[in-house]
Length: 196
Ligand code: FES
Image 1 (cartoon, rainbow, N blue to C red):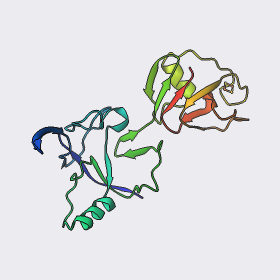
Image 2 (image 1 turned 90 degrees about the vertical axis):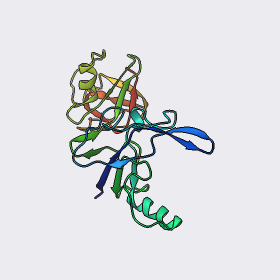
Image 3 (image 1 turned 45 degrees about the vertical axis):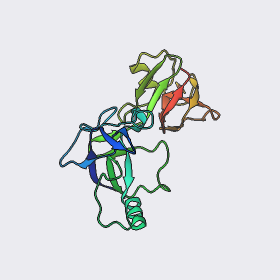
């Protein structure tokens, strides 16, 4: 079981580097108590180079304590300072071998959930654990769709899945081929794009 060792934040600042000024958000310091994670940032945090960092898909940077220890040993430094690699979350666990794109994590009251894009409707929204099925999410967003049994039996609404992965809950009577999904009983397993 992985654990969160420290939450670190810091706003970008200008630093002199090799004769020029660099705008960087690398400097992070631990915060005590709870802190709000929002769509683009943790409160009190920011990214400097927005081409390479930040945005909805990279709002929080996570780094493992084992990696910090590796670099300390490599460079012969002593001690651990949380946030010294610019990470927002210093964690124990979550190795590169264990973490996959599309994984979801709950930390405190924050749930890091996948984005669902309804491609034809030009609408993106976050799926949350209490959202229910993708059909229910589409209805909540006024995305036009059709349905009948809503239990995975009638195959009324087989929808092309343009990107990402889904999982069924409950399992339909018969799942459609790869690349298509029964939205009445499916949930996102990653950021997804539906042809709706
Ligand atoms: S509405 Fe019947 S299978 Fe989805």
